[in-house]
Length: 383
Ligand SMILES: [Fe+2]
Image 1 (tube, rainbow, N blue to C red):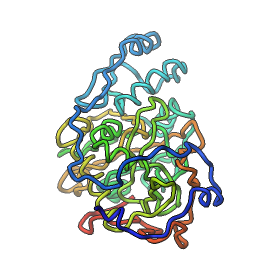
Image 2 (cartoon, rainbow, N blue to C red; image 1 turned 90 degrees about the vertical axis):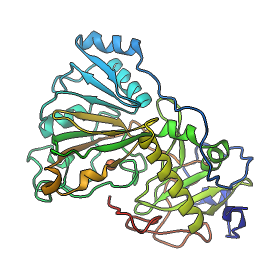
Image 3 (cartoon, rainbow, N blue to C red; image 1 turned 30 degrees about the vertical axis):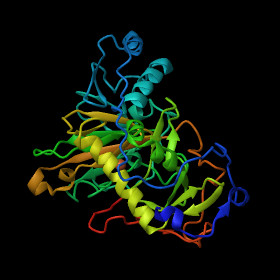
């Protein structure tokens, strides 16, 4: 028997949660299996990553005759023959690119040289709601101009950009009701000794879970430790409909379980630790085994766009080694607004709870502020 079922924490009914100000969506799912977490969680099925769709490429080539899309192994694709400085393409072509990003996780537009802040912002607005959604601080070395506030400048030298961001698995903008739909990573200077980003396909990651864990995780919702926003741990992708896992390893203050009988309870410390370690292993395995993740190393001129609802990521350990050791790394990140208002919680949970006040869900982990729950004290966390 796991500690999940042994816990006697008070629970909150679904009706009570709705009374807190629900944005009700999704409704109650049928739940039938045990909430036990299975350590031998892996499903034996191979990771499925859709191939690039030829019809979409043909459509893209009607506006970009020299465009080529080449798959990276096992996720993502490189795009050649398109200059991001040119006018925004038609919505049909944008939809084709977005569908490929939703399926393969990311597209890296090659040979762009260095885009100005204005050019990078305009290219970021090709996607989603065609608006920026900027929530970050601005480093003083960011190139000045009207779009300066939209550029998040990252580096391994504090004189050139913000240090140490995102070492643990996460999705960008998780503290928002509707996180960014697409994120751009434009490498401005590639470190001589490397230092890229690890990306994992969260749809294929969901498929790797055992049937029991898929069912259990689908009844969980995360609470952001800063904003208190509530998101499902398993969601259906807004474009593909594919089920994806989604959890922030450095900014989650609580996880709420909807039990089989429709009550809510908080995971306790042991359950949280188990979940976070399992999630970290699931994501890391994707990269290390090369089935549904990639350790991407940037090349000069790369502008990489992710679909943020299927692409979990973290900075590689090498990315944060000092410039004196690794060479200077400078990256400009920009973030685009999602074309919907809410990445809504399930089971009638409210979009926000007050993580800084007492828990309305009884006993369990409930940590407001900072990085939230630390599942491993030896790790570095920074958002
Ligand atoms: Fe990130």
